[in-house]
Amino acid sequence: MSRKNMLQLKMASPSKICKAFIVIISCGMFVWLLIKINKKDHGTDDRFHIVYFFPKLTTDPSQREVSQVLNKQRELELMKVAELNLNHDQVAQLHVMYLDDSVKQDFINYKMANKHKLTMHKVYRDPTYRDTFELINNQLLKMNLIILNNDNYLSQGWESINKTSLEKVMYALTRRGRNETSNSPGKCSMPDFCGLTNTYIGSHDAFAFRLTKPINEELLREFDFKMYPYGAENVFIWLFQNKMGFQTVNPCKEVHIYHMHCVKAGWTYTGKKKRIDRVRNQTGRAPFSLLT
Image (cartoon, rainbow, N blue to C red; front, side, top):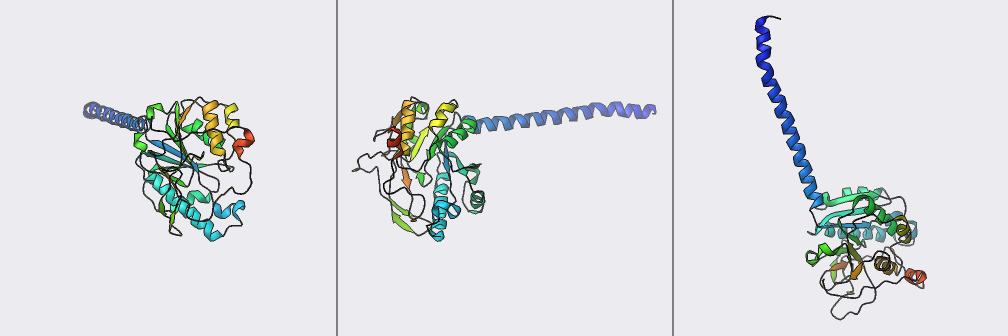
């Protein structure tokens, strides 16, 4: 190599080295910024994470006696409820557990805003509360949570909850009712279980709380019951009160959830079926109260 070429190489090397350092520093700053943004989104966002199961009624063997037209209408009605929850400003994420793979595709196909707040979770059986808490153990510790019946949606008052208390206080809310406009068949009037003249009857459709550590296997086994039988919510409350040491409140006149069930289809438990809370002798109650 000639002296001229060696001189050119020596003169060019510092520049190349500087450019390399600039690239490294820039990449490092970019990674740092992404980490900071991620921590901000998931570490300081105190909005709620809703968790519930979304069924596929048109393929559910238990719904064969119901018209498939009604089953499909009910699925669309539940999709509208999901959309209302996604649009609520106090909701950070809607975590939807699903058994039938077509449910995930249904959400992809359904036109709605705020899909970035939607997270889908595959399950491999008709879920119980245990499945919900296993999801929480694995992914949602230290977050403000709402376990919600899938035909209820959040409305006013959720910004007023004292979120610092959620590690010790569980909000077990009774649903409200009003005139609803469903995707199909249209308008209907839903009964109000927490109106000015209502008395408490033990009905609950939303549970708000925060867990800081995983629920152990012994307690998971106690939560291994389905969410739909009569009295299931009362067993849930009893376990929080007696096994987990939570105080329970029910300020449903100030913090509202609404029930949408205009379509005459979906899971129902009628007749003389035994209440699960009485079978287990675990009847928890959370009468109407004021915000704490």
